[in-house]
Length: 245
Image (tube, rainbow, N blue to C red):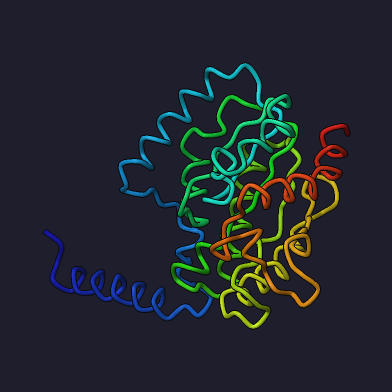
């Protein structure tokens, strides 16, 4: 056994280290938006497992779509536009309804981009960070930056098209739309014009007064069939250019 004085000295040093660590002003707790997290819903786990199987079955992936329910929607409301614009481009969709940035980070780290080398990845994520928790824009932007870092590590040769988070709410004064606008102001700076490119097509969906018509997004959040076709057409010149380079 240690002498009593030595034991007391060690205990004091340990306590001091813990106190200094807690008082360290530079040590900030990680945002939820950047901390990888899976979801418990059975459908979510089942979709993840199926995507892993589908990924192995697909001979090649040239175009990767990453996101939440809005990207997920290419499989239903956007199915016709997907067939027209992306089916022949060896496209693969890993959008999941309800996902926030932390869920995308987890999925990218758990097999959903393993064994592939897409020419281009299209990302549109963040509106659920806004809607579920009303995360400050800078926290959601930090989550998106983390996604870009994971992609750079796992898919170093893949170009990235980072889309502005789509508008939500009826008008420019909508609280959640303002948060999304703040996210977009931050993430546009992540583009380097080489590997990462930023594209804001939000004006496509809005009228001259900045109002979001229900004829395009009936719930003022998710595009309908018309909205998906507008989305595809608006980003097509950029996608075509980046795939060709």
